[in-house]
Length: 229
Image (cartoon, rainbow, N blue to C red; front, side, top):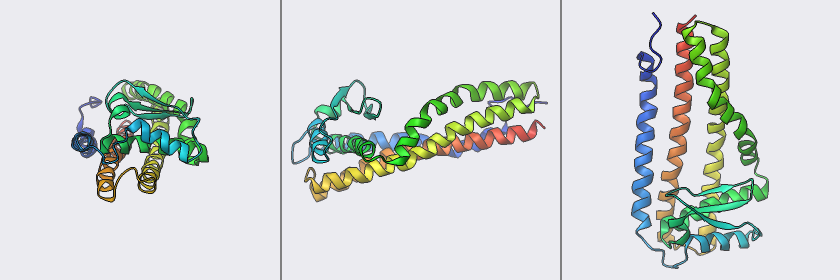
């Protein structure tokens, strides 16, 4: 009998990663809330700090724009734009300044030709395609007991897993760059930098959890494929 795909015993493989993902989400939100309530002594907003770091690194032509949402901050390499969530754009909190510096870290990576960032950007369409096609193909092959179709689904999903793996060094490197800039530029004091590190470390955990989840799901697909031989 073919086990039901979503609720068979192989689901146990996902539980540790699911627990890590839930903890990471709680950690990033609680840490962000704590340090979003602490204004930086310099009193500079996230937008102001982002613009200043960009200018100091000869990236003054990179715009800094507000974007709707909470923790929706990102760097868009297609338009070379740093986008900060509206709260972080206007806030002078330690959390806002830290996140702004992190996103500028991505702009610095782009400006310096950081290879993992280039790989992630070029790999994104392939990863999106893999995510879209992987499970329909695998499920069709699973229920019709057609191995080659399952293998194709696994191959497509492996592409999305590779994308999450490549994302890790990009995010860690951006945070390291942010900490250097915050310290050397005097945007945060030494005691405030500890808070910045906690904010950025908590944010990085979400990417670690996403990678663990993707790897666990890939392992589950391989287990289900083995059962279907």
